[in-house]
Length: 138
Image (cartoon, rainbow, N blue to C red):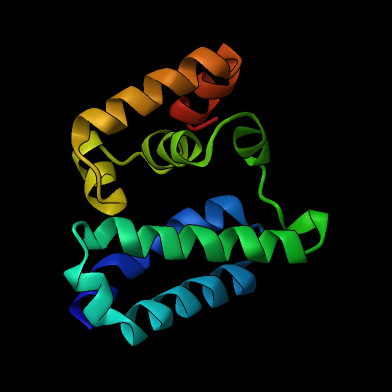
């Protein structure tokens, strides 16, 4: 229960950045948290519980976007079309949601240097204006 309360808000912010439909975003987050709760012993016994939970959330977002109308994809779809999921998630969390490196690492269940590395990799791939616009809130 504590895990769900701690992560729900940021999970919803992330899903809302990927899915334009607020009801679908809320449903995805509720489903992810319900799934995490239902397999909690496996999640908590994994080497990185936050990473395990994040994979569940990300998989549900991807599945919901595959099954939804094109209009359900939020404005940042180009980030996910251009980058591997791990790098795209870091761009959204760091730039769009304005989380710091530590907060992003905690949410993803990775070490802070992985966040820094993934953001640098994304900056090399994405057009400069895309990262600047996301990071400036434009």
